[in-house]
Amino acid sequence: MSGIQNYINHVALVLDASSSMSKLSAKVVEVADQQIAYLARRSQELDQETRVTVYVFADKVECIIYDKDVLRMPSLKQLYRVGGMTALLAATLKSQRELAQTAQLYGDHSFLTFVLTDGQENASHRCPDAPTRDPRELVRAVATMIETQQDNWTLAVLVPDQMGKREAVQCGFPKDNVAIWDATSTQGLEEAGQVIQQATEKFMVGRTKGIRGSRAVFSTGAEAVNKETIEAAGLAPVDPAQYALIPVARDVAIREWVVESGHSYRTGCAFYQLSKSEKIQAQKQIAVLEKKTDRVYTGPAARALLGLPSAEARVKPDQNDDFTIFVQSTSVNRKLVPQTRLLVMI
Image (cartoon, rainbow, N blue to C red):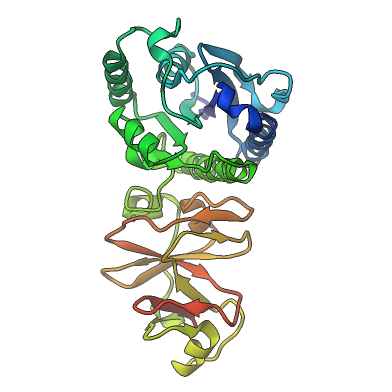
C-alpha cells in the first residue's frame, strides 16, 4: 500500500555579495532571515517540508547553506560577507546545476530559486565556477538551462533597473519571473523582500493545488490569474444576485458613488478596480472578475492567487485580457478612477 507523498520544497536564495552591496549588507541579512522565518511558519501551516539553500556571489560563487531543513536554519549574520564584482550568470548556472543533483525520491519535490542582484553581470567570464570564459556562451548556457528545466523548477530574479530586466529576459528568464527592485535604499530592499514573500506564498499555496512550478511568480496577469489557476485555488463564483457592477463615470469618492448609484453603503461592501501599483493591507479582501461573463470570484484564496501574504504588500495590475482584479475599500473617501468599474456586494 503506497503512502501519501510529502510536498517537499527546495527553496534557494542566490544573493549578490559584490562590493556595491556593502551599504545594504545588514539589511540583506535581515530580509533573508525574515524570509526564512516566513518559510518556516508557512511550511508548518501548509504541512509542507521546506529545505533551504543559500548561495552568495561576487568574483566567485559560494554555497553557504545547502538543502537545510527550514526549521533548523541559522541566521545569515555570520555567513554573508561582501566584496568583489558580480558573477551573476555563473551563480545562476552553479546554483541550478548543483541543486539538480538533489535526490527527488519519495515525495513531490519542487525547486524555487530567487536570484537577487543590485547590478549587471561583469565577472562570470573570469569566474572559476563558470563553464566557459566566453560571455556570449555564458548567456546561451543560462538560456538553454532555463529552457530545459523540468516543470517542477521555478527560477526568478530581482534586478535593479530596466536594463537589468532586458538582460535577464535575453538570458532566458521568463519575463514574469523578473522583477525590478530599488537597489539604492534599505526601503527598496525591504520591498524586494515583500515581493519575494508574495511570490513564495503564491508558490506554496499553488503546491497544495498540484501546481509544481511557475513562469509567472511576479505576475498578476494572464499567466497568474486564469480559469485554471482560479479553479486550482478552489474559488467559487459569487451568486450574481449578491453583487452589482457599476461603471465609474467621473472622479468621485467611493461612498458617494455607491449611494448615488442606488445602493446603501456599509464599510467594506465596495471593491475598486486595481488600476495602478499600490500597497494592499493584510485585512483587505480581493475579488476577481471574468470580463466575458461578469462572473465574480472572491474568498480568502483570492489573496493567495496574487501571492498576497498576511501582511501589507505591493501589487501592480499586469496585462490580462480575461480577468480584472478588484480590491476591497474600507475608506469612505477613496477616489475612484473614471472609466473603471466598481464592485458592490449587496
